[in-house]
Image (cartoon, rainbow, N blue to C red; front, side, top):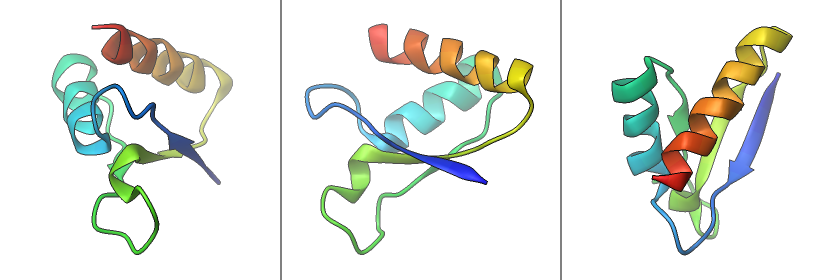
Length: 67
C-alpha cells in the first residue's frame, strides 16, 4: 500500500523533498518526476507502514515543507 502525495506548486519539488527527507530524517520515499503524468515532479509516493512510522513520516514531511 502507498499514498500518492501532491506537493504545493509554490514549494519544493518532489525530488527536492525526497532528498531532504533522506538527508535530514533518513526516510526514503520515491518522487514521481519523470513519470508520464501531469505535474509529475510535484508528487511523492509514500509507502504505508505502521501507525508510528506513518506519524514520523508526516512530521518529517511537514518540517521539510515548512523550511
